[in-house]
Amino acid sequence: MTLTAPPKPTTPTPRPADIMPPLLLPGEHFAAALAWLAVGSVGLIWIAPDLARGAFLTPRVVAVTHCFTLGWITTSIFGALYQLYPVVLGVPAKSIRVAHWTFWVLMLGTALLVGGAWFWSAWALAAGWVVMFAAVGGQSWNILGQRRRATRGRLIGLYVSGGHIGLGLAMAVVAARIGAELGWWSVGRLGVLNAHVHLAVVGFATLTAIGVGSKLFPMFLLSRDYRDRSLRWIGPLVLGGLVVSSSGALGNVRWLLQVGGLATAAGIVLYLRLAWEYFRTRTKPRLDPGLAHAAAALVFLALATSLGAVLLFAPSLNARTITAYATIGILGWLMLLIVGMYYKILPFLTWLHRFSPRVGKPGLPKVTDLISPRLAWSTLPLLAGGVAVLAVAVYAGSPVAAAAGAASIAAGVFLVVIQHVRLVTMERER
Amino acid sequence: MTVSLTEQRVAHVWRQLRGVIDPEVGLNIVQMGLVYDVHVRDATVQISMTLTTPGCPLGTAIVQGVERVVNELSWVVHTHVELVWDPPWHPGMIREESYRETGR
Image (tube, rainbow over all chains, first blue to last red; front, top):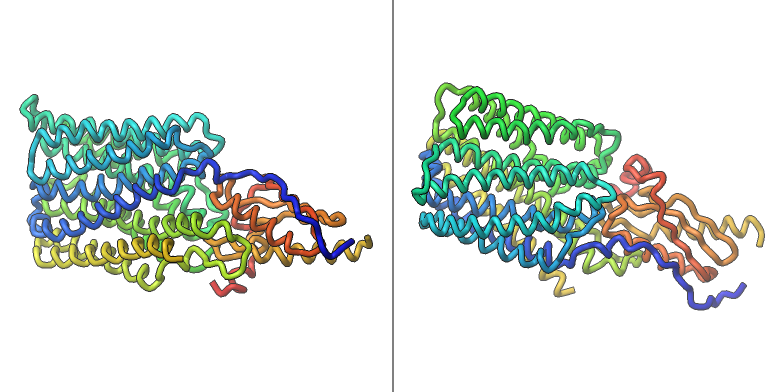
């Protein structure tokens, strides 16, 4: 044996990264989503007095709400699915080119709907709906059909498909509302709003979050020995309940609304129990900022579910209570959850593309080293506290406190955006 | 080659593998329980290992990192890394003392 070894051949190895999308695809979605989040958080301060009056049907409230629901939540989900489908199901999107086009169509549709709502132009809203239909159709074609080719994670694929059914139904319901606005027919305003909001927020976003989260939470928490058999029931309960409750809301049949609402709430309770199991059985002793944001989001989901169940049987509905309920559900649950996931996913993607060729060499940073823990932790009280203050202020009818809560959320969002901008510039500097 | 030399080389490989860190968890792949077996025959190293999930985006980088650190050993001529999925990895495979060692 000699000490000077000849060149060392290495064996060909499987390359799981080969089916990963280019960084630009999730990157453009996440960058745009952060921009929408920033716009929405500034708009939130603007509309805080309206919220405190319970005026949830005013054009600017509808516009700002869609900055969050379409700009932040939907864009983030679409970007995340392109990244996660290959990991979870073992299949990539059908076409990266179509995915890029879909992104720009989604941005155009979001801008038309937000602008159309702000200036209350029924034709802009209708055009936005058509463009959004094309975006959702393109994304569904690109992703959903791939489930049949999946080598694993089929249950998660079912949740994503179920979520898209929720989104499609939400769009169909709101089309009826836009048609009524154009004078084509007439529909009950509040029933449509009830069905649209729940189908979009719970049917699409929450169902997708539950499905994708069933992979991400155990992976990030290193959970062990938990039982996730309830996933078989959660999806059907949530989506089935929503279809029934939406029928009740649209047809103004109260008992149908209540039965469907209770079924959906039961599904969410089952999910909260499962999420508790993820955290309880975790191997990682300490929560990082991302997971702490997600844990806070789950608390807000529990609050929204409780309040929603109470509202189902309330003899009369107060506009401010409904607004507080929506605030907790959209901002407390979904906004906070996605911020938490950004703290996990974006530094990881940056690390993957910048440092992965150096694995095994000394001095390599860890993923958590790429963001400032102090800044990341500081956004939790700003965002969660802001949502809590805003929701209580709306319920109590205090415009000043509502504006303070909205300002706290905007400050938290500013810090979230700053950290992710730093991630990008860090990549350029090193 | 004597048995003791082989055992010594196997120990060298395990030590090298501790230099490959999972960047998300912050533990090395040995602490994570990702390495199932190390076999040395003369100057050839055969490593049987897994990943936390079959589609792990870090898969290629980790395998290349393993090859890199093992090839740093002067006596190694050939390194073969085999990715296996049975048994599938689960967090229970993380060595209990790992988090205490790293203070996380």
